[in-house]
Image (cartoon, rainbow, N blue to C red; front, side):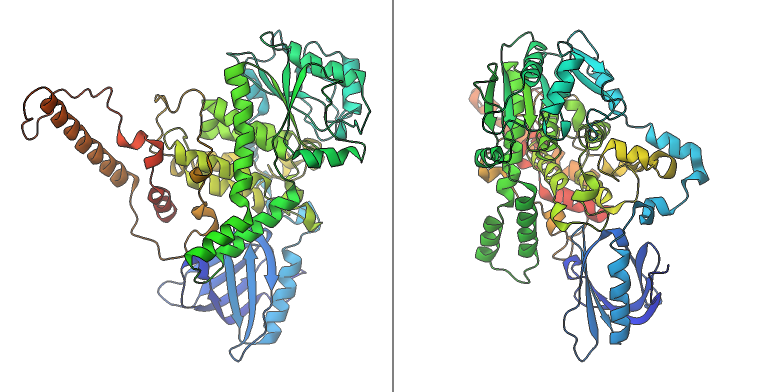
Length: 581
């Protein structure tokens, strides 16, 4: 509370244009230790607007006018609030207070650590046991005669950004593990991420080798060979470098780089062309600038979307996952994935491939486990990438945003394949930024243990699982062929859309809400009409006109319902979910 100069300001006007609000609301502004709260003066509604301080990404003070001083709050979920203060002094003090409150200097200042979790110790402990990476390894049948658990990193001495529990090829000796770790950036040696039980191929992850122009390591070469030997069905592996080739070549001058096919004789190198965090940060800002245009023409919108390059980057991430999934499922070849340090683009590519390969990861619980395993435990730098603490803004980048958007793009093509809806993805993104729970704090498993987060906070997964009913996709059918097996998306450019629910959720007043029941009823009616037309055509083909209302000759088990077609899934459904919930 010592950072709050003015806890209450009356006669403040609030305007949120992106929510479709055209007339400012008059009310009182309150500042607490964790939230900025606006309470409308209207005696009947008294509507409240709460903004968590950790969700504030920027503050602006445009020039004042005759009606007062303005303060603009930009949030990490892309909401923008315009506050108009009658007195400039109040505006200055609120600006100073929010500047400090929105830039915490230590983890103890964050929302999830400012409450007392000991008030319900049993519930807190249960929340942390809901989702565990060890459960996923057991589901994949590990350990087995190909992949074994190693205790080499049990105290984080081999690699401080890797989890304590690692699975490696059984042909890799302790000496090979240590030697490979010394030859990889940040000590991130090749370890298992996903094991395909049908083809016995595996997705492994690591960081770039410290090869420079001519350096090599016998242990690292043996480690890559051990990964290949763990797949009895193939005599080589793919090494997927997710970076553009030119970027990887430039890293050689700094003593890093990529694997040489001359030194690693059992590999085939593939570059995915995903740009770095700085390019992605700028690209997302440009697409936000497009959304802030007041009344853009069609040409202005399309030009802005093209210049942002955002959908091109989303396609690159999906293409990387598609390549890996095809190698695993179709060719039965294991894949070793890395970028520079192996915690951003590597996490994206491995996770997208896993979602394409494994129906389990397309369920709510499965996606939670996947993110906990491939992002949280494997050292994705959540606190740096999503600006949890006051730090270097160049470390901030929408890495998880892109993964979630790829899932959304896939759901547009395969609306029946995912158990969760759009709101699940949006809320998951918000929770990664907001610091309401301890799951996404810190940059590694080691750091989280040192912070004793399981003793001081709750897990985010229990929050999402508790509200799972509102995240359920009514189109999901676990038994459908679209849901089972490998997803094979169309990645031609015209298949990618702008994610309106994230970047412009309410530019115009929302249409009347359509309940899921109403939506499904209309879909069934459409299916019945198509079946009737099919019956009539079959009757005509048989030599006579079909009587009105006849349903002879219809094969119900083979007629594909309208809602199973990927291209016919309407955006309106997801918009209605946002209104309903």
